[in-house]
Amino acid sequence: MSDWRDVLLVDGYNMIGGWPELAALSQTGMQNARDRLLDQLADYQAFSGRRVIAVFDAYRVPGLGRSFVQGKVQVYFTKEKETADECIERLVGEYSHRRRQIYVATSDFVEQHVIFAQGALRISARELLVEIEENQKQVKQAIEPKSVAGKRHPIQDKLPMELRKRLEDWRRQ
Figure 1: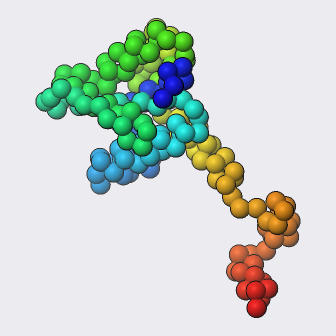
Figure 2 (figure 1 turned 90 degrees about the vertical axis):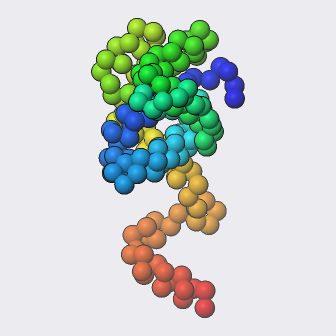
Figure 3 (figure 1 turned 30 degrees about the vertical axis):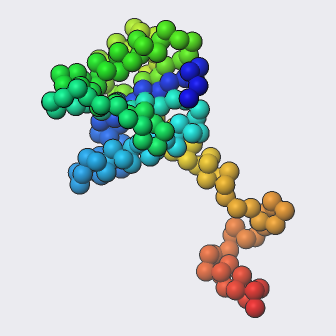
């Protein structure tokens, strides 16, 4: 991955708690919610060009922490006695020495002030969700099949789907 790209650091559990779909998924299993978040972040990374790093708090879990890549998104589980906020602050410090913009996705008010002081920009959980949803719409529009010669038939959009299907079946006979 290019070293010059802008970086988006994501407080993973903060997003899970702040996004309705993920909050609901977390009720049945945190792993499902994490995987869904990472899928969305991978798509966002591909579309936005930003390098995305997701950080999950393992504060109460014994061990050294771990880092791996899932769907081309760098994932960190913090080490014992390190919060996600502390890990994000450390990463902001590491990346701020290079020429790029750093964004931090968190709705944690205290964390926002700390990262501002280090020169990073904040994106709230809600703002990131809106940005991801907008990217998904743009991707869907870009890959949506077009009618003959790339032109849509205005009447086609006004007909009910069942009628369009019946006309298409009739046309093919």
